[in-house]
Length: 172
Ligand SMILES: [Zn+2]
Image (cartoon, rainbow, N blue to C red; front, side, top):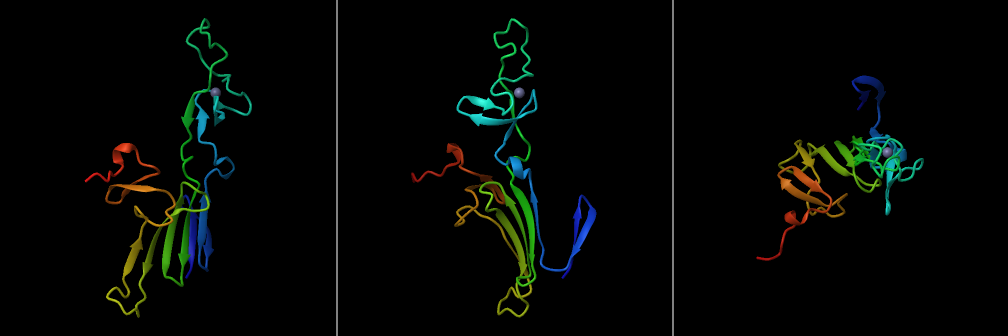
């Protein structure tokens, strides 16, 4: 088995063993989810509100509508969510022994991930499925799930605790 690894379509290397490729997103700042729309600094959420290491709670770029504004030069940051800050990383693992490829995506605990695996049932297996491909996907109620999932439509899941309106009630 060999595999060619490409990044943005450019060949990087050829691998001749089982492959495990992982892309980490901003590994040094995984706790940072917000950035200030005005000054551009990364923000930490504190009990007092959003703050930066450099400026504290006061935003140097805060723009009051006029200088009689009591918040003039003393305004707070304008938080916006940083794109992809929900993702710790993604990976691809091949396993020649299992004849499988697994794609992983980590959105919660960085030690774990959601995994989608396709494998081929061995041709000599005593099964109607011998030689066929099967796909394993995360599902609602999965033991040891990477994160709570709630099915919205077949193949579409909400991740994390569901809003009250989606919670199943036991009232029958
Ligand atoms: Zn700011």
